[in-house]
Image 1: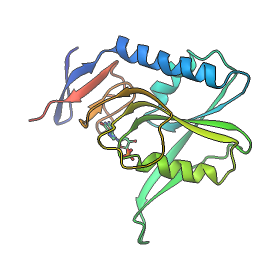
Image 2: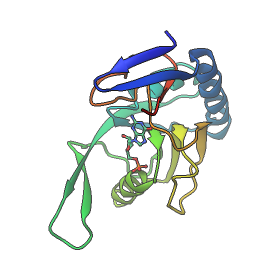
Image 3: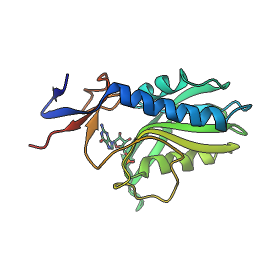
Length: 179
Ligand code: 5GP
């Protein structure tokens, strides 16, 4: 399938499944070296990271654990505007080597909020692995440690990413076709 229609938008195949798999395997190889002899806790950010988490973890040879976190964004009344909360996250991460798994890092605001919230729970270390990264949109200073694929500033779906709930099941990455 090279074109798909989701709700009101059209998308075209941008990165085929085989290329996504190769990129995920590269990140897995990095992590297999970095965490050898350790037992990292992977924290997948729902909903989008389920795909990357599954594809990544089946390629890891190190001892590891995984859990998932859901993030709530809402507009508070404080001057900080957007506030992000971790929903129902009761995992003890104190003293653990934590690797946060994201589907995509765009401006970086979400991942920085998550890092701040997890830091309060005193992990031994934290790093970030993401399936997709948009360097041209990124506004934060934090280094994204492990990036599978860098993409331009276009809206994409597939491999866990959605457009209003649709498209997460598409293998590969699809890019929006401008009207
Ligand atoms: P941030 O700007 O905070 O890094 O990213 C916020 C969220 O925007 C991501 O977690 C993701 O849900 C969504 N997002 C950003 N770029 C895209 C994209 O190209 N496609 C989809 N489906 N979601 C995106």
